[in-house]
Image (cartoon, rainbow, N blue to C red):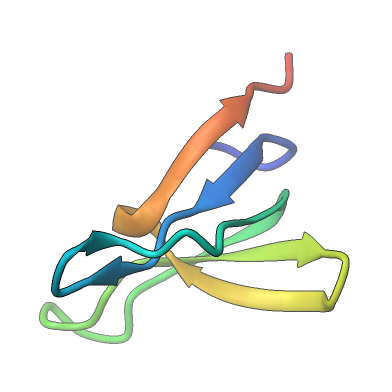
Length: 64
């Protein structure tokens, strides 16, 4: 995953993944503040800028 990639956010639930999936474009990869923190990406969506946990993102279309 890198800046410019289109990603889909899959939110985990107790029964699998939520049907409500957002998509957006990665604008920044954020550094974890410590070893136990989740690594995140800043994503531009229809709702604006959001921070998503990388482990719950799936690359839909890679930038070249």
